[in-house]
Amino acid sequence: MEQNIIVRIAHSGDTSYASAITDEMASSAKARGTGIAKRSPEYVAQKIEEGKAVIAHTEFGEWVGFCYIEAWQHGQFVANSGLIVAPSFRKSGIAKKIKQTIFQLSREKYPDAKLFGLTTGLAVMKINSELGYEPVTYSELTDDEEFWAGCKSCVNYDILMSKDRKNCMCTAMLYEPKATQEDVPTSSRDKQNKFFNWFRKK
Image 1 (cartoon, rainbow, N blue to C red):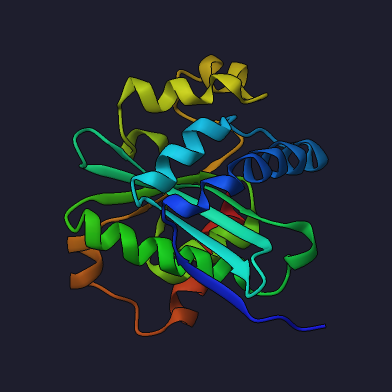
Image 2 (image 1 turned 30 degrees about the vertical axis):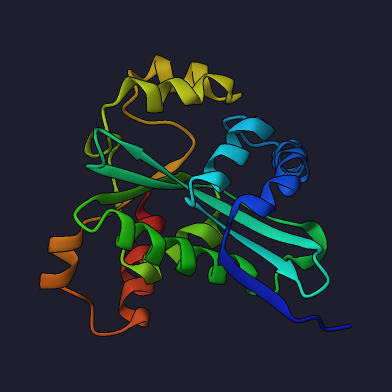
């Protein structure tokens, strides 16, 4: 049965979803057998309170999906983190809508920031590519120690450190406002082709 799903900027009334969100983050990572930095319900609630999160829910209030903003180096770098969709709503296009909404919110709050992400998911890489992100080396990301400390709870942290933080299981992607405005691919298909050509060489 199709339901009307609402994707919007989260507000303080949404903190009640925090535990369900973090539980699903942990459960999803375990099921996939991939690494993920752990988030506490308190941390997710804080992001919601700050207006730095996007939430999706049904018209009846059932939680559907979530993502939040993290800023590093005094707002020079911004990450859209913790993207998660409830199992029963996956493969419905909701993740893409959430990513589009959090991307716009990030651009409004931090118009001059470089947006970046680390992910092992091909679907997320594809969405990022459509938004204008490019695959990059880890050296092009923030050097903020607090950001990298967040990887300590990931099962792949030892791999990251053994490579001097130059590489790991995640793919790094970066959106640079000025560069993207000056040289935007002619279509989303161009962006996808550029990304997949890079991915096949990886």
